[in-house]
Image (cartoon, rainbow, N blue to C red):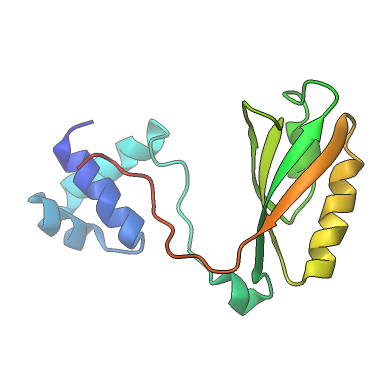
Length: 146
């Protein structure tokens, strides 16, 4: 991956709907060459998927919380159980006082409470510590180093 690939990744993270002609113009390539570069980035799984960024509040998911999940057993084989809870946006095995860190989006705190209840149903989960976000200053895409 070279500087052109990194620049293409930055441009696509800003707006993945850009035409290949516009992308190529920004990096000094033809539309066809830009398309080929992006295709190779997809094939090599550098670009894992193309999606849109949705305002969570606009679709009824304005409550954001991060939850530290305590366990009585190794949780490394429990990814499917966490993935089965649709309100969980991310789940990470972590080092430290907790075993798993999850990012949760719900519409209300009552729905958040229900998610916490469902987390306790996962075999090995022994506790949770939820932190509700009051305001998000920013979220950024992955840095490509360009």
